[in-house]
Amino acid sequence: MKFNKITIVGLGLIGGSLARALKESNQVGVVVGIDTDEETIKYAFDNEIIDEGASSLNEVIYDSEIIIIATYVGMIEDTAKAVFEIATDQAIITDVGSVKLSVVSEIEADLPDNLHFVGGHPIAGTENSGVRSIDPKLFKDRRCILTPTQKTDLTAKNKVKSMWELVGSQVYEMDSETHDHIFGIVSHLPHVVAYSLMNTVLNAEDADQLLDFAGGGLKDYTRVAASSPQMWTEIFKANKDQMLKAISEFKGSLENIEAAIENDDFETLKEILEKAAKTKRSL
Amino acid sequence: MKFNKITIVGLGLIGGSLARALKESNQVGVVVGIDTDEETIKYAFDNEIIDEGASSLNEVIYDSEIIIIATYVGMIEDTAKAVFEIATDQAIITDVGSVKLSVVSEIEADLPDNLHFVGGHPIAGTENSGVRSIDPKLFKDRRCILTPTQKTDLTAKNKVKSMWELVGSQVYEMDSETHDHIFGIVSHLPHVVAYSLMNTVLNAEDADQLLDFAGGGLKDYTRVAASSPQMWTEIFKANKDQMLKAISEFKGSLENIEAAIENDDFETLKEILEKAAKTKRSL
Image 1 (cartoon, rainbow over the protein chains, first blue to last red):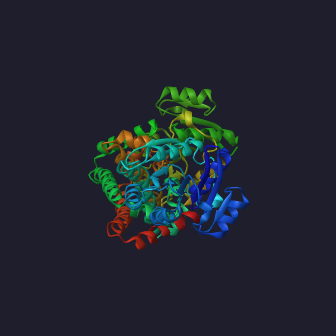
Image 2: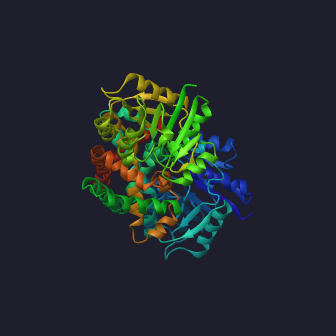
Image 3: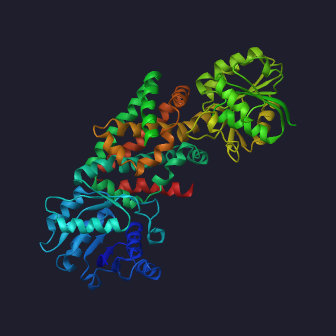
C-alpha cells in the first residue's frame, strides 16, 4: 500500500476517473469520494469507483493523506476552504484545475500551517463530463503538471507526484504563470476559436442550411465546441489575462491571412499557410 | 456499361479516387487518366486506377463522354481551355473545384457551342494528397454538389449526376453563389482559423515549448491545418469575396467572447458558449 486513504472531492470525469484508477492500482487502502449529487455518490459506490462516499465534507475524509479537489475551476477556492476546516493535521491538498496562478495564490494565502497544498493539472479529458463518462485509463501516458511554489513542502509534492505516477501519468513541474500562458494558447484559445466558429454559423441568416453542410472542415471542431460551457466559462474567467493576450495574438495571425486575401497577395498567403502546415506535419 | 469512356485530368486524391471508383463500378468501358507527372501515370496504371494514361492532353481522350477536371482550383480554367481544343463533339466537361462562381462563369464564357459544361464539387477529401492516398470509397454516401446555370444542358447535367451516383454519392444542386457562401463558412473559414491558430503558436517566442504541450485542444486542428497550402491558397483566392465576408463575421463572434471576458461579463460569456455547445451536440 502506497497510501492508506485518499479523498476526491467532485466525482466528474476527472475525479471519477482518478478514483477508479486509484482503486485499480491496489495501492490505496481506502478511496473516498465526495460529491454534492447523491445519485453520483450512489453510482460511484455501486460501480466500485469509490470505497466510501458522502454528499458533503464530513468525518468520512478524516485521516486522508491526500485530498484532491476535482471540482470546476470556479469552485476550487471555496472547496479548499471547506477542506481546511476538516482535514487532519499534515494532510496534503491538491487540485486538478486547468488554471493555476489565480487558484494557487488564493489557496496558499489561506492555507493553515498544519496542512499542505500542491497545485496540479492532469492534461486529460474528453468532451464528455460526469461520473458516467469515467475512464480509469484516462491518465495513462498523459502528462500531469504540478505547479509548486516556494511555499510548497517537498515531501507533499513528492507524494502528489507519486499518486499521479500510480495512475500512469508523466509528472512535469513548472510555475503557475508559465502553465497558464502555455495552456491559455494550446488549450483555452482553441476552445474560444471553436466556440466562435460555431457561433459564426449559428448567427448567419441561413444557419440551418449551413449546419446541413457542416460535414466539411467544421466537423473537426465538434469535440472542442461540445465541451461544458460552465466549465469553460470558469476557465476563461480564471485565466482572464492570458486569454486576452492569446486572443489578441490570434487576431493578429487571422488578420495577416485576411490582409493577404484582401490585397491579392497570394505569395504571402501561401507562405503563411506553408509555415502552419509544415509544423503540423512534424507534431 | 453506363459510359463508354471517361477521362479524368489530374490524378490527385480526388481524381485518382474517382478513377479507381469508376473502374470498380464496372460500368465504364475505359477510364483514362491525364497527369503532368509521369510517375503518377505509371503508378495509376500499375495499380489499376486507370485503363489508359498520358502526361498531356492528347488523342487518348478522344470520344470521352465525360471529361472531369480534377486539378487544383487555380488551374481549372486553363485546363478547361486546353480540353476545349481537343474534346470530341458533344463531350461533357465537369470539374471538382471547391469554389464554383468564378470557375463556372469563366469556363462558360469560353465554352464552345458543341461542348457542355457542368460545375461540380464532391464534398470529400482528407488532409492527404496525391495518387498514393486514393480511396475508392471516398465518395460513398458523401454529397456531391452540382451548380448548373441557365446555360447548362439538362442531358449533360443528368449524365454527370449519374456518374457521381455510380461511385455512391448523393447529388445535390444549388447555384454557384450559394455554394461558395456555404462552403466559404463551413469549410474554407475553418481552414483559415486552423492556419491562424497554428501560426499563433509558431509566432510565439516560446513556440517550441508550446508545441511540446500541443496535445490539448490544439490537436483537433491537426487535420485541417495539415492540408495542402497550394490548394488552399488557390481556394481562398478564387473565393475571395465570400472569404472576406466569412472572416469578418467570425471576427465579430470572436470579439463577442473577447469583450465578455474583458468586461468580466461571465453571464453573457456562458450564454455564448451554451449556444455553440447546444447546437454542436445536435449535429
